[in-house]
Length: 324
Image (cartoon, rainbow, N blue to C red; front, side):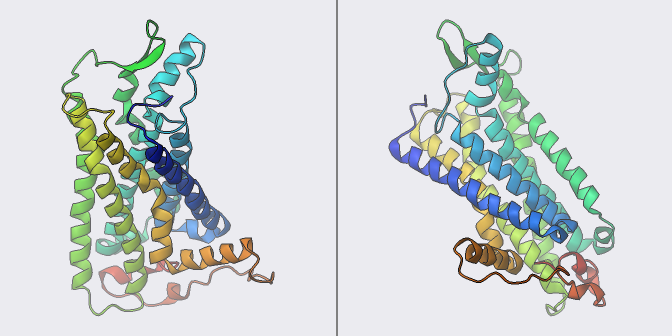
């Protein structure tokens, strides 16, 4: 059960995206859960949320109309729930918007680390967790209209899109603004300020390096999500006005570009984070038995920079970035 836009190679690419999203982000979660000290850092809590979101995206991509859509259930209530959440890909795209706003929250966290170090030093992991919970709730709210656009049609015995009973021509713009324009503009503006501030710092010292590394990871994740999602969101909005065919191959390719964001981040962490890279290598060697078992250091990661004197705006927050 799939839409007309699917071809054998779209099935293949969607399958690869789902597979890499599940495997790569499971690896990230494994690293964060086995190195609990990492989760004491606010930015790693956002990275944990991103990884969890991307894993769930991989799961719901598999059971979506883009891959292996399950048959419509028998009960009346079950049919409606199926059409509104699974067939419409509401859950899948809600997870995407949660990822977008998680990157926005991570961007704000980086902005505080670079430009407001005193405020940043006061941030606790519990506050980052509260921010993550808010982001998840907000992601659900801003995609709520999709639940009312899809329904089960008894005469056709299938799911179908329907127009909203009120403000059908207005909500696409509202959705586009909340789901794309606000978070993307926020990320761009904050990173411009971050880069400007980093360039004004004195010669990059050992204290500045961790801040720069974490910020580069966040910038890379935000850049890929902006590039990946803007085209499909524009196409999706235009489809609501009949300008773009939602079943066209071009629209499917743009959706594929968006969903591919769920599998890029684990690679970005490995590229920009020496700690993640080391953990990836350890896991690889362990899985393929390339090294003999040895005693592990039970003392955990030593934070060498935590006792270093701080100076300048970014130095004061460097102790929260030492694990990158």
